[in-house]
Amino acid sequence: MKIAFISTKNAVRSIIAEAVAKKLSKLALISPEIYSCGVEPAKEVPAEVNKVLQERGYHTHDLKPKALYDIPYEEIDVLITVSPEARDACPYSMSHKRREHWVVEEPKTLQKEDLIKVVEQVEE
Image (tube, rainbow, N blue to C red; front, side, top):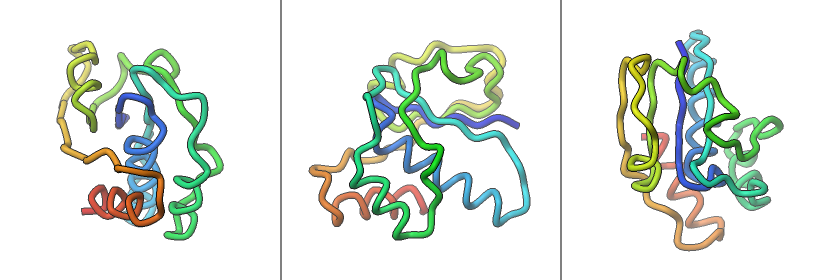
């Protein structure tokens, strides 16, 4: 199974979702391929995001912004958008067995407290 989390910049929300999903799937002893990307990817993941994820026990070594063409988009089984822009911009594909939109609020700032709220929202 291949799962993708897609946001606008792939720098905060979808990156957090990818990190959370990878950890939870490992704990559940399942091994889906998990990706994230952005419709207008940023140049890098902010250091503040990596720091918050690391403090909460998530691996960040392979997290970097990617574009739609950087993942096997046509092979994705479950596509989850986490920003309205991504929801509206992602092309539909017959290969997607399930497509969802999660309302994940964009953090107001890159302050630790705001990023923790996003992590907690995704963890729920």
